[in-house]
Length: 240
Image 1 (tube, rainbow, N blue to C red):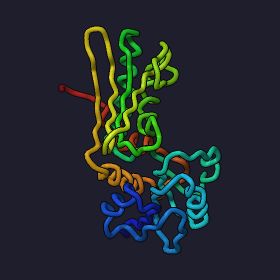
Image 2 (cartoon, rainbow, N blue to C red):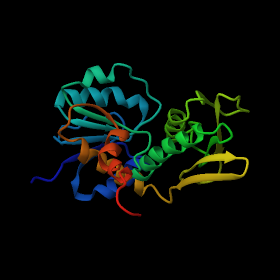
Image 3 (tube, rainbow, N blue to C red):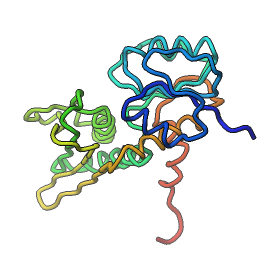
């Protein structure tokens, strides 16, 4: 079987980490809005939101599957544009461990829904230069919590009302990223925390997403990949 040929947009922190992990599988690494001519099977966009439109146009023109790792973009017609033509996967966080955490957050939300005294919350910490707050990952985890716990219909950074999920944001130092999902009850507290020690998990997850996406058509998310790879972990049988 021929090795997957991968192209990469972006030379920032994430792009550099992906290039290191990809090794010889990487056919080219372009800047923000370059449109390389060398054919690849899948391209990963780790550039900036403003470059997504020309990168998508290039992917559609060359029939190249595209993994989108940029944040801050809005493209309501993305699904209709790619349907039946190429595969596109979008992700706010490529870590498979974070994808597992999102599924566990859904379970924690369901557990909170059983008792109004169990109050879910979320806290995230990133380096002081990170622009978006909350992070895309925090928004994903918050959404999973609220799906599980329907009495929480929106999140807030301020003092929450009963229908609001409390989200805390820290921007300080050089932290790669720490996210904590918790349940606070009168007699006990449960917390689930993920701490990234480097960008390697995100780079590895981006490459896993590229391999999973190739050959599929339509719009996908990291949740679709997680459903394929991680959901068997939630099927229990036999004795513990």
